[in-house]
Length: 82
Image (cartoon, rainbow, N blue to C red; front, side, top):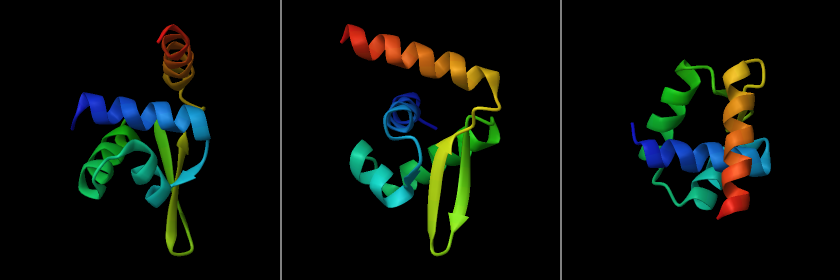
């Protein structure tokens, strides 16, 4: 699990909301295996939800986890600074 990869994923999800995994890989520039590993990590900790929709998977932030709202607010603040 890579901290920078997980941050890229969380930042992209804050920006796009729901997004399919193929587009998420393109937006973040992460290899598919790195993406899958980090999504599994974030999913196990209830930061993201991964839904199977037909042949594709869609990922979104899990807003039922209060930590997600804190992380989202922090990432939005940081993006305004840089």
